[in-house]
Structures are given as structure tokens and as C-alpha cells.
Image (cartoon, rainbow, N blue to C red; front, side, top):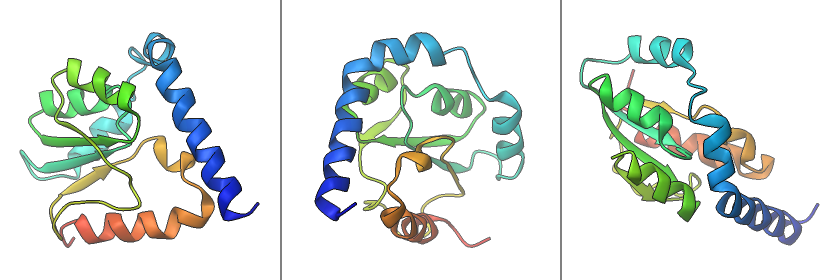
Amino acid sequence: MDKNELKSKLKQALKTYDICSKIYIEYTENKLFQFQLTKFASMLPDKGKVLDAGCGIGRDSKYLSEDGFDVIAIDISESMLEEAKKREVKALKMDMTSLKFDKDSFDGIWCMASFSDIPKSDSKKVLKQFYKVLKPK
């Protein structure tokens, strides 16, 4: 698959998320990954700063915020961001391949399911972006 085909497929996926956000909410809002979130939170400092990369409707961001963390959520889907903001989540439109945060900004990055939506050709770029914005250790 060439680069143009890949970009086209990514645009199709984004359009699908925008169209199906209400259905997505219905099926995922109450399916919290509490064990995974609790394990993740246990590795962070109290009131640490967390990036929820690919936040979707903000379900996990809200959970982490309620647990005392300073959470910034990002997604590229406008409709998903609208839903996240309804949950009082600090949500920004941003692509994981080009994070607009300073170096060493976050204590942790939560990226539960969105990494699988990244084209394989961009996976190293995303990981480098994550590494850049994570605090040492």
C-alpha cells in the first residue's frame, strides 16, 4: 500500500469515527478498563500529569481526572472531542504523530486502543513523540 492509499484509509477511518460517535458511546461508555487504569495510575506520582492519546469520548480521561490526575486528552476526531468535552475533559484536537507539547511534559501516557489505528509506517514516529513528551523515568 502506498502513502496516498494509506492517507486515504486514515481519512476514511476518521470519517467513520465522526459519523459513528453516538453508537460508539453506547457500546463503550460503560466498558471501563478499571484494572488496567488502576495499574497504570499506580505507577504515576500523586496528581501526576497524564496524556490520554486517542481519548475517544473521554471515558478514561474522566476516570483518571476523578482519581486526581491532571489529564490532557487528544484525538483527531471532532465528534469524539465534542463528547469528551461533555464529560468535562480537557480535550484538544491533535495528531499523535505531531504532538504540540514541550519535552518532558507528562508523567504518563495512556493510549489504550488508539495505537492500533496508527499506520505501521507511522508507529515509530508516534513512539518518538511519546518519548519526547514523557518525563525521564
